[in-house]
Length: 126
Image (cartoon, rainbow, N blue to C red; front, side, top):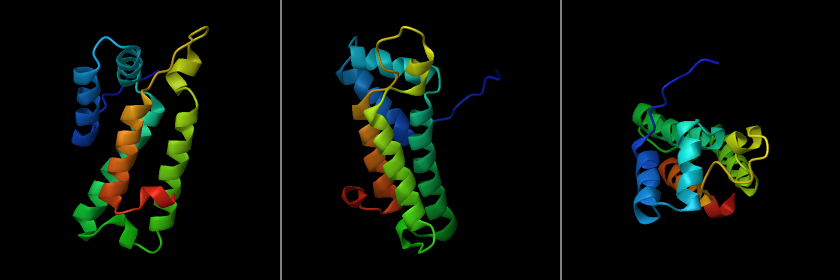
């Protein structure tokens, strides 16, 4: 397996730091730290959606929601990623006998809403 460095978006870093600062030494922080260190896919997905929404605005000077071809598909990706929060993260699933998660859903929800905001999409309607 090849190791790659992940450069998280500032919004992701802030959400992670908020958890570690407000809830240190908790199960939630331990689970999220595991996910951060081992590149939990759902964390990478939300971070990537934030990055894409920001890059779209930079390139086109507008939010994703204004793009009649992309808006619905981008919203579907957000909704699909959010639905995955009902299950354990992939890193946790890969660990035989591991009874915890590899993400904290409060962090993931924060990233969901941040991606919606940056994209200009109403997250309540997804």
